[in-house]
Length: 340
Ligand SMILES: [Zn+2]
Image (cartoon, rainbow, N blue to C red; front, side):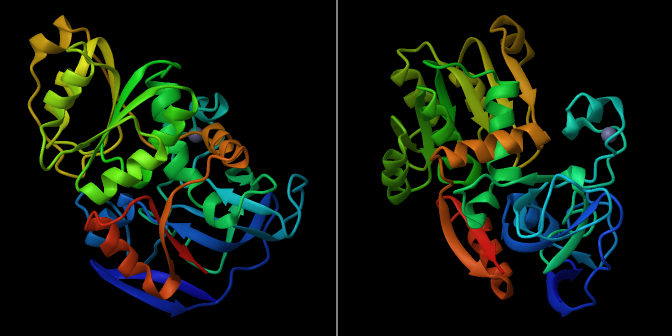
């Protein structure tokens, strides 16, 4: 079978390797159908300092597939069924896992495709407890965007920022995979959405997706425009993932008592913070990473109800690296999906 393997920093190799053995007790074997790309793949490909890992490593952090075989004692799945996979090897037994806070697992064995072997291969064996069924009517290409793309946003907006209908939210980088998902999810519950993009073509697409106000951050200062749009009150929630370039501006966009939720730092990881402003304005700043199993199921349910992810490009497995280039070059509007 094929396995797309990182053999060195910025060096991918599509190797032919032995398929896994039949699934063991409590395991399922999944035939991978699609891998969706994330900025995590870009960091992994470049060889990021915080990634403790051993090469070679099979890449791919987010995927969908069909059940190829089931191990002893697995009753919840049947061969041929569409599924998606949780992206980290959680223990399933610690307090966080037992309480459904999977992304706070105390004994996590690593992120698949980043610390340990990932999903960009034809077949993979996994514990059945890390697999989630895809509802009828959801294409596997779309489902591949559920475990990270959609579920991260579900977790950020609803579990963490507690976004309510009627509130105003600023979504940074509205053309990114998670930005497009955030626009869709916030509009679905009746929020006012302000979003930032880097060019006019993306601005049109963001409007078509439902954004109420679109700011081209290359020609306008988003802080000023956002304050003007909200009659100087500020927004209830800022959806951050850009990092150093935007973080302080994002705080200036918040109303008193507003919430900023962040899951990324693509423009840089460090910034300075005005602590007077933080406590006087009673901001809530929430870090968010990954999602729970429940968030993935909620994401798939949203897709089944018609909230389909925006897919910018689909590329074959052999062109994984071209997909990464598009993502890293900020050329995309929506997700890049690798099909098998
Ligand atoms: Zn655990």
